[in-house]
Image 1 (cartoon, rainbow, N blue to C red):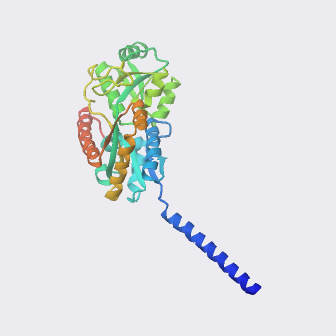
Image 2: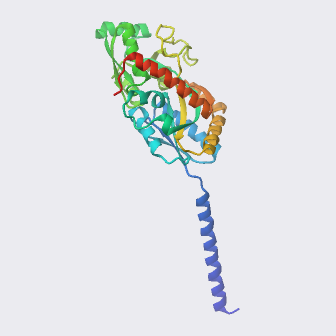
Amino acid sequence: MTTSRRSLLSRLLRTGALAGAALTVGLACAQAPKPIRLLVGFPPGGGTDAIARTLAEKLKDELGQPVVVENRPGAGGQIAAQALKASAPDGTTLFLTHDHTISILPQVVKNPGYEPARDFVAVGGFATFVNAFAVSGGTPARSFSEYVGWVKASGGGKGAVGIPAPASTPEFLVKLIGQKYQLDLVSAPYRGSAPMMADMLGNQISAGVASVQDFMENHKAGKVRVVGVLGTKRQAAMPDVPTFDEMGLKGFEDLPYYGIYAPTGTPQKFINDFSNALARVVAQPDVREHLTAMGLAVGHMSPLQLATREKAYTEAWTRIIKTSGFVAQ
């Protein structure tokens, strides 16, 4: 073989190898699964964000697909819910949220920009939780009754209570507490529990209402004091804290829930596969232990079970909102 022929053959082989490598890379890129965006309607650092990141890390392994938490904070989850509605129903965008955004907010906002029953489909639930009333470290009260006495003595019955979002379960709780104990309490809404907690830790506000998991770490550290929880049972993580049911405040027996939703039209196979992966994740001992330590009662709900719970909870809150006289804003 002449030198020129050997050179030509060498060039052809190199070209073929490069083309083959390019084809291999192209096929790999084409087959790589797209990341799943898990929308969260609250800022980083809060309880819902921490829950989402715990689950996302485990779901990634179960699905063999990246799951990326994307925070869209504001308006009690309304902004994230609107983002979900606007997303393509192709299994690449989901929304992790709790009862407020799904069952309550659409009833207290005239134009929320979405209708859960029309725009969303339940994928799976994984926990219920309770809300709690806590006082800041700068408040002398060591119990709820002491807090009531302190407000009457130091503020003439007037006080401000932080809440993670307006027109939420915490706001209705503050309203009923004021009525029952003859206090002039004003709800101070924040953009999530994290900024509210920052003000409580800085003694900028004397009390706040949020989920137990939002208070858990600082309660254990003695930086804030949880003095009452909702529901009918005391929390295992804080057994000395009484329920408001024990103290005679009724109407909050139904427990809020956490769930994951997809845009309507998302393929049923994806919904079933994701829900099954979620069930496997929350069954893992380390996940259950971690979420339980945050104040959650962990348990998987199928798409149908989550949808059924959502419907019942929404109906219960329809009665509470109507009784309170609240007018949609």
